[in-house]
Length: 85
Image 1: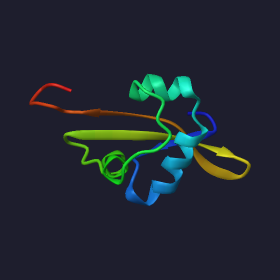
Image 2: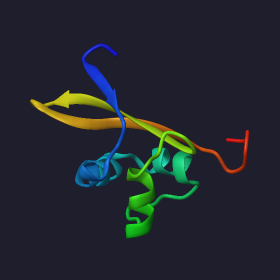
Image 3: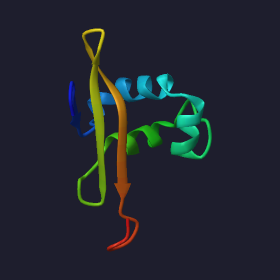
């Protein structure tokens, strides 16, 4: 990725994930969550941040903005049953 990087989210990224949601458009949030959500429960945030890379995989796209690394996007998959994601 030119000018950016990717990384796995971690519990240390809590404030950055919340900031990324706050920067997202209503349309983007609707496409991701099937509703426009501007806040999440603590357990939902924990789910977003705690991945095991076996049954729950997530990556965040990180870019520099005004000299600071910010989350620009992300993706994930969750295995709901064996051999089904």
